[in-house]
Length: 112
Length: 112
Image (cartoon, rainbow over all chains, first blue to last red; front, side, top):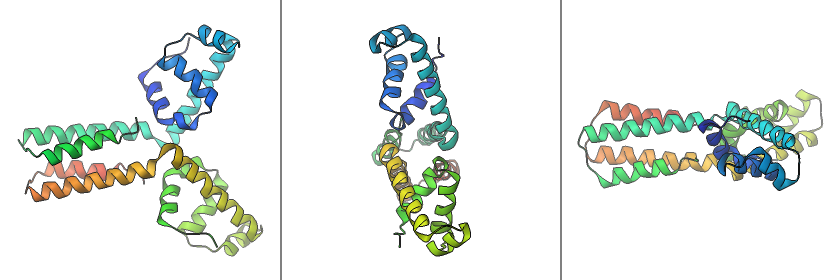
């Protein structure tokens, strides 16, 4: 059994484009579509152990990318700041549709 | 002669952690410290052509990372939005040191 965490899902969302097609497929089936290791093994006609090893290695690769680029950390920080801005603007009873639109845009450009 | 653009400097700033030590060194000398290809060649006792090929290949690698992750594009978009927010806040004559601090924080978390 491999650990399933929100963190792994986030890492996968950010760095998926850097993975190989095969790595990406196993990860999608396991973490997004909730297949079991056995089901993936059957689908690809390989051993359950091979699927396990591949996914475990891929998670390590994702962690290495995060150590180097830190996108998940930046994303979280950005989210906190935008939440802070929204809070402050509400508290000040500032109303401006342009500002609201810009804050929504900020949320949308997040890679995740 | 290799092209020197702000774009290449930005790509390098974002994706440098994904390069090898040697790729990183040549890029720093050429794009940040403004060494010539000949000077780098002399420093590392290799041919000018080898330095040229290495840097050219590295720029391609950086472009490939950008195609996959698009961090420079996201950074630019974020910068435009924050500029828009600042403009709108000034125009509305809104004053709040907390909001100013949060906008400054947004600028600072940019990876660049």
